[in-house]
Every structure is written in structure tokens, then in C-alpha cells.
Image (cartoon, rainbow, N blue to C red; front, side, top):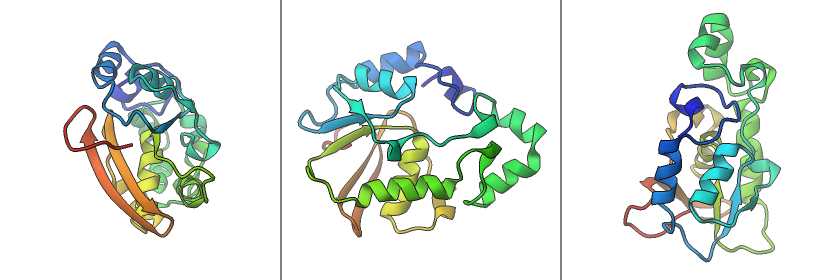
Length: 185
């Protein structure tokens, strides 16, 4: 967790707060040690990966957070008050660019491209990424349209496990880190 997430703010680059840092440290060792780890570019993702004990490389650009344009750092309440029609469009139209940033459909497309790209090394990958990247991966894995993006809720410090291959994905959602039930990533 970070102050931004607790305050329902579009990411502003804030690091984890003390509670988030402690929760991530408590879950260290819960992910497969033999997996290749990558982390999103935000301070929150990098710090989470480190607290989990992962030696994570930077994630490819396809797994970057959604660009929220001029909404970055503002709360949803602030943006809803200032730009109510734009917020309504963002929530209803996957091709709408929020705050002049990146449409949900574009996030879904780039994450889908990464998932379906043939890997030279098809080993297990643990990706510590922003919730919207996980949502996009789930939407693609289920073969759902980009409009289903808002029907997925991703809690902090949970594992969403995708197994399979391009065209045949299986999804296991929302296991809290550190809980029993196998490994995930």
C-alpha cells in the first residue's frame, strides 16, 4: 500500500507506506524462488519486489502502468468533480484516453502482446506490477473484451497466477501473498 493507493489517487510515484512495506516484508519467501522476477517502474512496485526478497529486473515496457495523463497524482474524487464527463467516458469506453493519457484498450493490447509473445525462455515469471496491468492480463487470459477491465478487482499484495500458453490461459485470482495453496506469480 501507498499513500496514493489509500487515498484513491492516480499513481503519483509515491513509495510504499510503512504498513505496505511491513506487509511485503512479511510475505517474503512466498513466491517461487526459481522464477524470473520483473518489476514495474513505479517506486511502489520496485520497493515491493525488494521487500519480497526478489532480485527483479525492470519489466518490459508492455507491463508498464497506465499513463493517466493530467490525472496523475490527483484523486478520483478531484477528477470526478473537475471532469465528470471524462471520468464517465473513461469508465465506459475502453478506447477513451483518460486525462490525455493511455486508453484501457491500449493497456490491454500491450499486455496481451507480451503474454502471447513467444519466449526464448518460457520459465515461470513473477511480475510485480500495477493493478491495471494485472487486470489487463486477466481480461486477455479470459478472452474477454477490454470493456471487462473494470469487472476485475485487484487487491494489493495478492497473487494472480496465469498458466498455460497463448490462446489457452488458465487464471487463479487473488490469493493473498503468504497464504497456503501453492506458488504463484
